[in-house]
Length: 251
Ligand code: RET
Image (cartoon, rainbow, N blue to C red; front, side, top):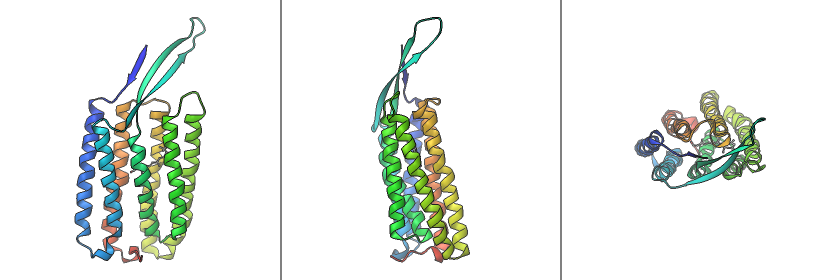
């Protein structure tokens, strides 16, 4: 007997709501950029690009693009009756990974520039991040019952630890060198980022990974995280940057 795990009304509505929110955030960040001279718009450019990419990915998913269907055979074992099998068909929203492969490096760039990290260290953090997202995509498309799924997931988690490592140790040291005000801001916004980002692999494990939460629950959970990690993060960064000269970037 087949079990179809497809998006429902609440999930579809959520996708459209986040699409609109990301457009509004992009417009708001653009308006904020007009209040500073051209030479101070680097964070605005990066951050607006992040929400534009997210809007594109939400438009894709809301209209049914960037989704594939995975077929999983689940075996039910029982001592008394012969084994029975259920075939699960579950939607995988791979458009997210296209979004994340572009936007998470840009978020790291924002944080790296804020801390004053060197180009080399920023690039290393971004490469670890790309490995995390691409191996996460392999995990999502991986076949159940083979090492593909949780093997790639484990590799992605190790890459994630490298990302944290670079930002915490290197970013932290560089932010300290730029004075107590900048350090306090960096520690707050990087700590906020760490909390939110760590929720993604947890949602993945409960949704794509073990299917404990349905497709609508997955869509809603990622929607909340995306709005916080891109929209609220961006507004916080750009508004603080305008009043914090230590955060200026010399490029
Ligand atoms: C995956 C699954 C594999 C293990 C790990 C993951 C981490 C994903 C993260 C995503 C962050 C996304 C953001 C999006 C935009 O706002 C790929 C879910 C570690 C950290 C911040």
